[in-house]
Length: 144
Image (tube, rainbow, N blue to C red; front, side):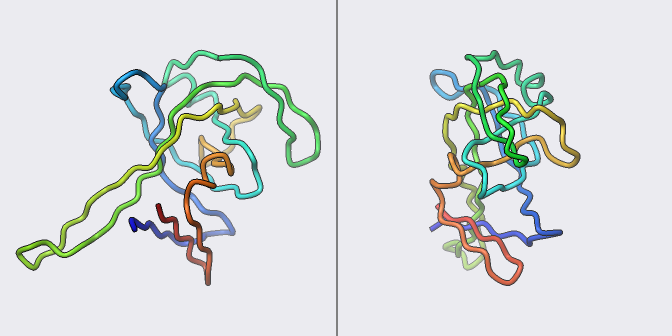
């Protein structure tokens, strides 16, 4: 099972994700962004920077409840988000080969009403629920 692990730093898990506008044949250009894992968020949110860089068009309006309990109305975008997972395995010649797997989903993502410092994507349970997550002793492990 492909697995990715990273250290929890300052009580946060940061990853790099690949984001694109879904297209037939999956040939849309992908851009990478820093992402914050938020297991308390039901939906994935993106910053205006992501929307601008992808030239994404809004598919409507949506509402989410912010951490302070307020309902926020914001634009919704259909985006494909992949989380790269690397796996090392022995090669036939005895060396080590690294294969990269990116598991992704087309999601209805919402625009963040602010630009947080340090990340552009907030990964919610709408994508995280498709992975197996283990957190133990300061290590975050994500598996397909």
